[in-house]
Amino acid sequence: AAPGEPHRILAFGTWLPPDRAAEIERAVDALRARGQSFELTVTTLNGRTVEADGQVIGGRAILRLREVTGVKYELAELAQRHRRQTDDMAALQALIDAMPSPVWARDEAGKINFVNAAYVHAVAAKSSLDAVERGTELFGGAAGAEILRAHEAAAAYSGRLPAVIAGHRRTLDVISVPAPRGSAGIGIDATEAEMLRGELARMVDAHRRTLDQLATG
Image (cartoon, rainbow, N blue to C red; front, side):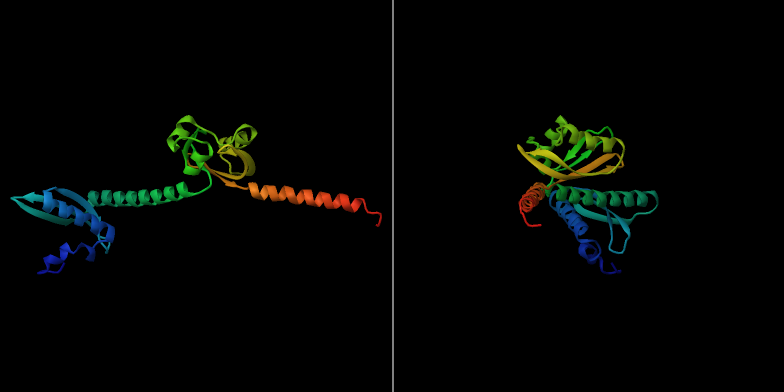
């Protein structure tokens, strides 16, 4: 704020991003109402890192703002980057959990360590934690062995495999790719496409037999 305009500092939305402005406003309200002190590190709209310290001193709510430099600046930058990555990961995980196709991830040893809601439904588990703890596999037998071989070789896998989804036999187009510490995969239901392919093959075969029975060349 310009000299003589200290009131503009409390208009947090004018110099902070909306989410950070809302956070510091809540902190200041709690400081005034309940004497709840706080320490926050925020990045301003012009890219400067500021440390906000709120305390009650002598019965008055005091807010101190100081620009962060040196090692504390580097730590604040790392914390900000970590927050952004965490938010991005949370959004991505929410999207994956909402997908109708089973999605899973494996650790270096090939053990399931993450599944989405569709996977939980497919294997009739109680929860994602239950599926992970029990290591419940969606694909068994030769199909499961194919995926595990690709995992052990740190190679991508793509193929059409049979699976039992919530008690019903289905056909899934499976994609599994290596990750830095394991692998991740998705199974897209291709049952209808497979049924249509089979029906078309039967129709072609029936037409061929009919033509073979004609006396005319």
